Structures are given as C-alpha cells and as structure tokens.
Image (cartoon, rainbow, N blue to C red; front, side):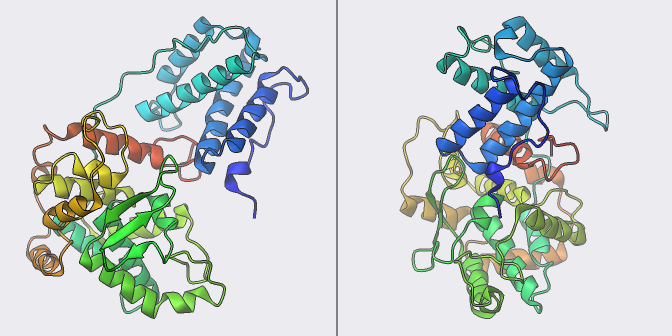
Amino acid sequence: MANRGDRKTKVPIGDARDPHGLWVWMQRHLEWMRERHYSDRTVRMRDVYLGYFLQWCDARGIGRPTELTRPILERYQSHLFLHRKKDGKPLSFVSQVGRLVAVRSFFRWLARQNVILSNPASDLEMPRRERRLPRDVLTPAEAELVLAQPDTRDPLGVRDRAILETLYSTGVRRLELIGLSVFDLDVERGTLMVRQGKGKKDRVVPIGERAIAWIDRYVREVRPDYACGRDEGALFLTHLGDSIVPEYLTHRLRGYLVSSEVGKGGSCHIFRHTMATAMLDNGADVRFVPEMLGHANLSTTQIYTHVPIRKLKEIHAATHPSAKLERAADIAAEAAVDVVADAADVAGDYDDHDELLTSLAAEAADEVTPNDSGENDADG
C-alpha cells in the first residue's frame, strides 16, 4: 500500500509541461519536504492547500512563480477571507492561516532555491488569531456516560472501552493513539510513551490506573485473537488484525457520543479537551497540562522549563477524575444520578487558562483531514 504522504494531487493545475511553472515547482517543493522527513500529514495538507492556491492562480492566468507579487498575494488573502463554502459559511481562521502558511513557506523555499529574486510573501500578514474556547467539553459525569457506552460483553466493546479510557486519561491525539505500540505502556510506572507525536517529538505522559486496567483486559482477552499470527506490534487493532485508520476511529467514537445522549458533538478530540479542562478545574497548574498535551510553544507556558515525568504523574493522579479506580467509581455513581450537568460548570473559570483551551480548539479544527470533511477543507 502506498504511503499516504507520497500521494500527489492527481490532476495537474496549469501547464504541467512548463519546467518553470507553478505546478512543477510545487511538486519539487513537496518532494523536498519528503526528503527532509516532514510528516506524511504535513506534506498531504501542503499538497491540498497549495492546490487551492494554484487553482486560484490558474483562473487568473498566472502560471509562473516570477509572475506573483505581494499585491497579488494580498488579493489571494482577501479571496480567502471572502470565500464561502458550499454551506454558506466562511473559511475558519485555521483554514485561512493554513492556506496562507503553505503559500508563504512555498515562496520562502522558492527564494532559497533562487527561483525568484525576492520573496513577495515575506511580509504577508497572517489573520489575527481567534480566541476561541472548545465548543464541546464533557463534564466528568458526562465522560463516564460516554465511556460506559461500549458493550464490554463483546470483544470490540472491550477494545473501544480501552481506547476511550486511554484518550480520556492521557489526552493524546487521534494519530498518536493509533501509533501506540504494545510496548509503549509502562504499567509499573503508570506512563505511556507517545512516539513521533506532532512535530515528530516523543514524550512520556501519565496514564491512570483505570485506563491501564482496561488496556490490560483488552491485551489479554481480545488482542491475541485480533493479531491473527501476524502481529506487527500496534496496540489497538481492528477485528481483522489491521491497524486502525483515523476515519474509522472517528466514526466509532462519534457513535458512542451520540448514543450517550449527552448532547455534545465531536469524537476523538473532545476527550483531549475534557482531560485538559478536568485537570485545570481540579487545580492543576497550567504549566503541567501543556506538557501532557505535547504543546511546545504555548505563549502562556514558554517561560517554564521541561516538567519531570515524576512530578507530572503526581499532578495527573491528583487532578484527573479517572486516575484512581476509587475516584472513578464515585464519578460513575454521580453520573447515574445526575445525567445532565450545567454547561457553565463545564467551562469553569477559563480566565486563567483560555490560551491553553484556545489552542486546543484551533488544534481540533486542524485535526480534520481532507478525508474527514466534505469539502477538502480543514474546518471541523
């Protein structure tokens, strides 16, 4: 099976025979990114976003990089701001910035390759960042209701419960969970190794006792049958023994959110929001949560140094609702009594933490790939 990062835009845009044309230079740029070991997803999204730009240029008779000037790029930026999708909604901040960053990076590369004498995108101003909080966050009681949805009498239910518990306990990203190996869980230390996360960075995060217990049950009772004698080491497998793909995982988890009737949308990323919010609401210092999430450049946490895993484990155990089996049982009992929680209590006091949660909201939108959306757009 071909690597998804090696997939190129199928139909050439403009004159593909022109060795100095935008299309040819775009393909060279993407190849350069692959050679520099950019992630498959980054290359794929750059391919999509530059494709949009080339379509815009082709419609205006612009075929070569040397024909583009800063005023023309500013017109493209205005086009993105005014553009409306099929549903009549504008492009989100994340989509606009993603497309402009792709163009800016492309022209910076062209300048370094001496294809153009000067970079017309060097002073291109990005749209001001929206300060948006996550749209949907589960309360601890609602999280317990969602986690209880899989039928654990069925092997798939056991696997899905283990997946939900892992997402809720650790806040790992969708692709990070898919990439987990059976060797990445350290039961004795209560930690999970996230390998090659966003930015191709490894990190170690705490994982609660209850999540460990469900993973252990899945590994003992379910995974041996799924591996089917061709075990390649992936922790979570389909019933056919294959690694889980992002779209499948999103579909499964969205179904559990719907069946729980908590009235909140989302899928994988909602547990990332929920984990961060729960820890902050229970008193976790804002410096520790970004360490778990794998955020390297949050403006509110740049002044802090790396947090040792021992201290991070202590903070996780003290503030995460499912970190201890006893506390999880108490929350489950609360969920049975109180199904609907006040949305204002979900948010808590965001004043001290809105930068972190705003970053999570933007990340959630960016998490949606062209395969997930109906318009090949990064809007979630």
